[in-house]
Image (cartoon, rainbow, N blue to C red; front, side, top):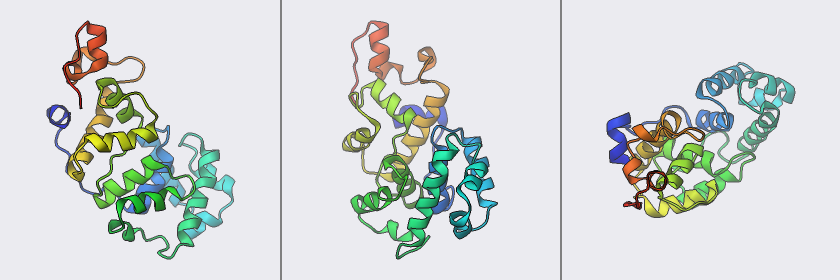
Length: 219
């Protein structure tokens, strides 16, 4: 899939786009939220002060600061709890130790934080530390299920299933993740996928069913 998507969306070098803690908090904010609103919510959140100040702020102030993110009333306490757990950990707000921690242990450490699931943990580890994990968001999950790379399953199970069929190469995993995200946003949408212009259609089980063809590809 990566080589099929690259001509459409370009090569995506694996370079950290932001600091690890920024990535962690922004990914919490991004759930069910557009990228523009996620960015706006993060920047207004930081206007409350440093991380200690955000922890100490009234939760309603945090919720108001991140109001452009969907579900701010539930995200605000989770963000404060996550930051407090980091503050009280041996490394504090510094996540650099994750670079050398075994991947399984790094995933567990992150997912033990309040409000941090496997997708958020995987994003931080892949994007910031080039660890061999594969974040599965709603777009990645939808497309990999439709093309037949994995059977129907929940997003959490999909993380494990896809890692079994993909090479453990972080640059490969990063480019595939980013380009599947773009493909899901632009072509393979949930409600009205544009199958007629989809570069994956000849490899797609769902397209084959609707087009009366037998699928000829499996991941």
